[in-house]
Length: 242
Length: 381
Ligand SMILES: Nc1ncnc2c1ncn2[C@@H]1O[C@H](COP(=O)(O)OP(=O)(O)OP(=O)(O)O)[C@@H](O)[C@H]1O
Ligand SMILES: [Mg+2]
Picture 1: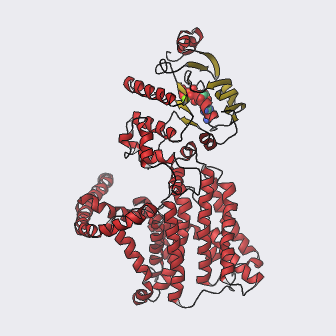
Picture 2 (picture 1 turned 135 degrees about the vertical axis):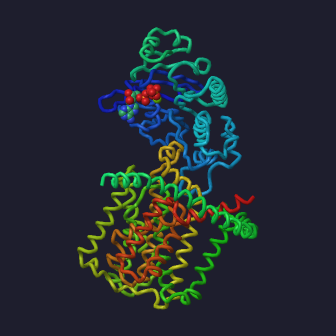
Picture 3 (picture 1 turned 90 degrees about the vertical axis):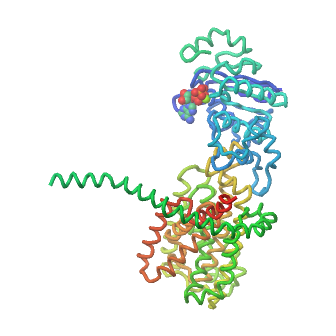
């Protein structure tokens, strides 16, 4: 059964068509790569799924539920969580507090709910920042800030994760480690879409790849097929390499 | 002539450097030694009180925040001083009990403002409209319904009126992000002011003098204001130290992160306004019982709204107890220290103080003292 169904998604900003009639089905337990050159509309697709932006046209379903017009927090509570391209931790709270916020119930009556220290430790340990729980976000190296963003998403107990450029700014060792952790999330039952510029970190991670170019779907297939695809090569010629 | 100008120019150009030098040497030669001496003097006190503070921390720390020995001494000392003021205040000055009573009411306003504006960062410039709603409801009930109505009837209805008006303002405006909320609260208080002055049925400029004061006994009057204030401080501190406080601060720091956490920021913003409106209403009822008069100048004018912000700023926003301290300092300066001056001069000084705090101690004086006291232990262990 499809966990996520994006159907005919179009997003216009004034005259600019950022996403044009884009459709995507993701099956339970899949890891799908979504790639495309700069400005091709990858983050906009995620922003539409998460209701950060209203869609111009099209529908989005999660587990058979229409979520097109839901609010962001409702979508998160249905089990869909996104790690955005930009990190935005709350600098006033240490790592543990930032994770804790993501475990608090959406209820004004719940004054003492949320994860215990042990549970927060567990979330952090799944992405290897359990040693940094008392540190402030602005003291962390870049890779740890990115890990914190993933830990926050994990803390909402998602069924499905949308990861926007999780490998950006990481070195090869860090990329390999993170790819291994993402693979483990899948083994725990999560369904995942990973956005990246190019195939670098995705090649050995994803089951299949969808390519966006100028807001339109350009190609779809196995990582090997996409790496060979002539039209994809051409689309990337303008910018950096595949 | 030219050489004079050149000389003057050289001197002037060194002035900013000089000021920095002076500030630096003041810090090195005056503030630092004072701080170190204080630390040396206070560290044993801190250690001596630590067991008591720990007892409190174990039982109540999770609910109201943990304290060090010195912080506990400050809170406990202040509480004892306030509770016994009926005995000692008249010996200090004839007007002190009145000032403390007034400060208690304003502390309620400043703390109420803080739980909403200070915590969420959605700054209300019109909070006096809420206390005014309560005050005018009391007056209108007495004038138009029955002058014999008891406080037990008028007070709950008045607080309810503050809550209803609060929700009327919050529901449409807090759905919007950005400055609209602040502007709407500002307009709300201007509107309410004109409403009360324009219609004689609403009392006009002189307002209503029919409500009775609670009591003519200054000691009793003080306790009528103090006890509700302390209970409100307790309740709001409890709220602020819970998940609620954490979410409200997160809204101020990063509203989209709150949505991403699966939490509805709009719901919490509106709830914080409701939570603020209720004690604002209680404060309004107390102000009626203090003055015995409900008029635009005492209750509505936008200056009142700004004054509670000033108190919160002086004490330290988003800390509940900071605004409480700020209100007492503000009223003490206003009515005890500066009482010999005319109103304009007093306020000139007070607004100057607000400006100084904003520039040099942005966290507020009481939050500064609080953290300083908390740090004494850290440097001695
Ligand atoms: N809020 C917005 N308002 C106007 N235009 C926008 C907005 N968000 C995105 N766009 C435009 O939509 C297009 C797609 O942007 P998007 O951020 O989705 O690309 P992307 O594929 O994520 O690029 P990158 O790899 O650089 O992250 C770009 O032309 C961008 O300028
Ligand atoms: Mg992007």
